[in-house]
Every structure is written in structure tokens, then in C-alpha cells.
Amino acid sequence: MPSERVTKIAHSVLFGLTLLVGIIALIISATLVSHYNKNGYPPQHTGGYTARIRILLVASVWTTVFGIALTVGFQLLGNHVAFGILAHLVPITIAFVLFVIGAASLTALTDKIDCGRVTDAFSRCGVVKGLVVISWIESIILLVTLVFLITLAFVARGRYGVHKSTLYAD
Image (cartoon, rainbow, N blue to C red; front, side, top):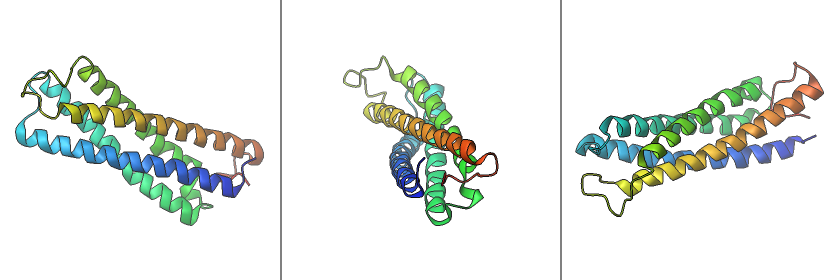
């Protein structure tokens, strides 16, 4: 049975990583959207790049906002229902789905593109590929976080029944 201390440390590590990688994805996707809005999107699949990069921008904003709120809130009010299991599961699940959708669709669009051989028409090719990599990393971290939260949910449910709804099992 995980103690309060172990839960707090694991939460801090997982949400710290989620927040760090989310901020990096936010910076990359925001600079790409800003650059392409000023200079135009790559001509190969203009609509495709627009939607895919913006999905990742939304996913990274979502992850950053909820990552800050859940990390700070849990550290200050960990025993409060407002920062319980359900309050963690919903935003993290939405963030995971958004990142998987964005990363998979941008991967499919850029999979066959070699940035060393592209013409000047596709500026920031390497940055787009970097966004794909950081998005997959964030997807994996979010998956691990979801497994952690679901495990805590089952432990809390098994020990306390339906009445205990914070992340602490003890």
C-alpha cells in the first residue's frame, strides 16, 4: 500500500516531467504557429500542417495549465477532493488523447520527408520534426502518469470503497 510520502514524491516527479516536457512542446509549437502565420505554411499540405501543429499547441497549453494547477494544488491541498483522483484523471486523459492525435497525425505527414533534401519552400523542417519527437515523449510520460493514477484509483477503491476520493491511499 503506497504511503502519503511515496504518493507525493511519485506525483511530484511525474507531474514535474509532464509539466517540463509540456512547456517545451508549448514553446516549439507556439513558435511554429507564429512563424507559419507570418510566412505561410509549407505548400505541400498547407491545411494539414496548420491543423496538426495547432492541435499540438492546444495539447501543450492544456497540459501546461492543468499540470501547474494539479501540481501546485496537490502539494498544498492533497487531501482535498478538488485535487483527488477524478480531478487528475480527466485532464490527463484529455491531454494524452490530444497529444497522441497530434503526434500521430504530424508523424504521418512528415514521415517521408528528409529535412536535408527539402527545398526552401519547407522552412523549419527540423523544428517540425523536433515537435513530433517531443510530442511522442510527452505522450509516453502522460501514459505512465495515467497508469499511476489508475493504479492509485484501484488501490483507493479496494481499500476505502467509493467514499475515499483523494490520491492518498493511507
